[in-house]
Image (cartoon, rainbow, N blue to C red; front, side):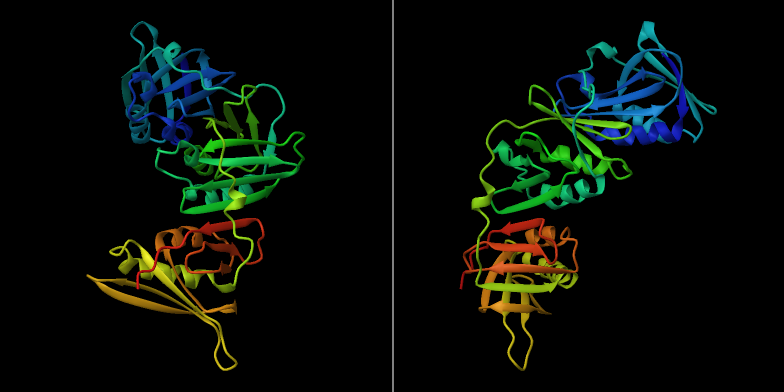
Length: 377
């Protein structure tokens, strides 16, 4: 293998695939990245067997070939090289990659490319296109609610439900639920559900920042993998096997108090409350008081710590219904308020022990359910 490419392009490609490298694996080759010539371009690949990423960059290919090299060494080296042309040549006998850029030269010992697991690429036409901005927003509004605890693997994933011209993403960790619907440019002939690891979608959100063309979603015929095709990148993820809980049963159908507040002010009040709530199991109280003829409605956001003190923030609110005091984990409130994306947010509540429902005002496509915390008197 003998190829040349720009340091800037190589560094960018490695930053895209780098997060898919397995940090700790019994297979040494999974700590490596694959470099392979492919139809006049250089293909970079990394995988941890759950997620795999292929990225193609422009290159001048003199001799075809492939090699895997230790990811951390290679990425650090490329980032340290001058912003010039990088010439790479594989010395096959010793499986060593020789790099030259400007007045720098290095040799990296590799492992034969034959030992690297195959990271699939889409074959033929087909797939479901989704607008990148829309999908990225949906990912940010849903993935944070997925469980990080591996004890219930199904909850570490995000349900993706394809039906008619709509994609619904849902994630839950037992304490909260996020549901977002996205319009598809074309109808799906047969409705289907898959469960995608939340980590894979977070990666997709990260690497699709500059994507302009629709992202094409392809399910493998065996239904055990999903491929996301971008312009010069393909992300592949294993799917989680099993049945996702029926999230629709968790969403309350009615409420006794409907509160509308300024999103930024609510978020700021929650961040202030966190200073005291972090010493008290993150409990933050919301005291919602409807207005009278003389005074507008208000929401008091308060937190108390036996060790450090307490705070109260008062927010103007438009309130329909009964007065209520309810407590939530303030970290969960901060998570959802950070991704609501509208100037105002609505909170629907029934009783202090029933779930609260948060929705962006003016956007019917996003629903977040959050379980209350017990209020000891």
